Amino acid sequence: MGRGRSANYDDQREMILLRAAQLFARRGYVATSMNQVAEACGFSKAALYHYYRDKYSLLVSIAEGHVSELRALVIETEAEKLPPKQRLRTMILRIVDTYSNAQDAHRVLTEDVKFLEPADRERVLNTEREVVAGFSRAVAAAYPEAGVARLDKPLTMLLFGMINWMFTWMKPDGELTHEAIAPIVADLFAGGVPAVQRRFAPSDVPSL
Image 1 (tube, rainbow, N blue to C red):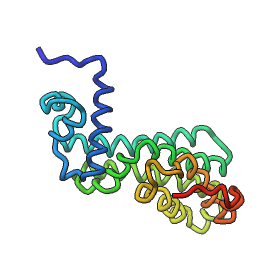
Image 2: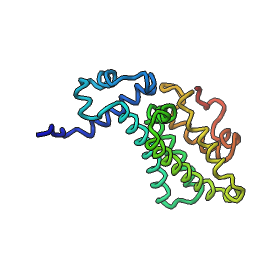
Image 3: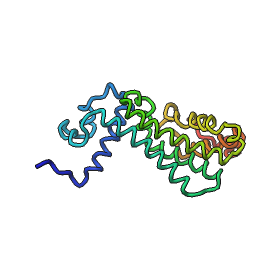
Image 4: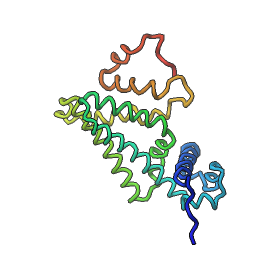
């Protein structure tokens, strides 16, 4: 008779993914072993295999889970039928908030997707494309002239250029938090630097 699943099986799987993402983000996928993941989780290696069959399955689950969460964010926001500019702003605020709780997974997705096998990589990238398409729709709806000029996709990629690389310069324990930066990103995208300046007095600007 096979070993049954514990009541907290799903919670344990989620914890393992968080620990593995931390290790992959800090050490790199290639340099991280299953022994190190097991140690970080407080498991024996044999116990770890009860949840994930190998290191590659961890990578797939981290990457796919992260992009699926982003896609769900887009779908849920679109379903709310907000006015166009509010929809775009809400998407921006929500994706920055999501990144604040998934910086390791985002770093893994950014740096280690190249280690996925072709079919898995294409599935993850297709989900990413759905996220980009959702933001492009929001940009085109908020700024119809951008859609007419076929600038909705380039503007979306510029937006993601601001958001996707914040993990390279934002300090995890710094004064500037994701909660604080999210409306700044939204203001900057919608109104440029003057819009950001209107939000703060000089003495109120948080430091990096």
